[in-house]
Image 1 (cartoon, one colour):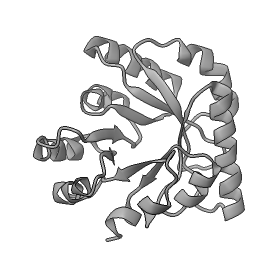
Image 2 (cartoon, one colour):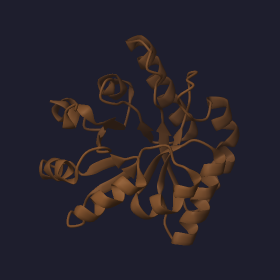
Image 3 (cartoon, helix red, strand yellow):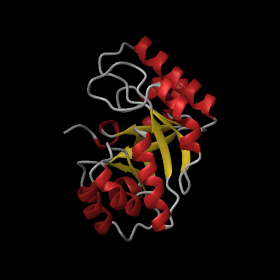
Image 4 (cartoon, helix red, strand yellow):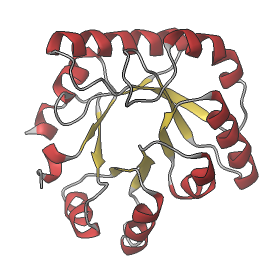
Length: 203
């Protein structure tokens, strides 16, 4: 019912971290093409096992450590959690060396949350001219992960804010919404929902 309920403008990114290659293959057989992983080594093993499925669109959704940038760029077309200028600069430099042009989402932190990374809106605005001028990267959109304790009203407001910020930066993509709140995110204008348990089932 998730696929049926999802508006046509919203892309479904199946969060396959912690899931087996067989589970990914089964979803692929049903037509799913975009899969999100957050651990480089785990993803590499699955990518080897699923090498015959050449149309899989692998996207990196985890917190990206500086020392993992090169292997991530080699294995993923898109990175959803670019949370600092230094990281963006490193991605740009290594992408140039590898002759790649990854799609990037700028992670915004729009509410206080000790467990989440990301740029404040003020930081994002201030850094945007420098971020935009980095070569060998394609800025696709913004990404947000809400704090756990937000109410439905609070979530809606956060998603609406993220959409307005993406528009202000001239970015078409809004990576927001997960298994518990994808409907609200889609209503507010998400273009990519990152869904795991609602697709694969909870363990």
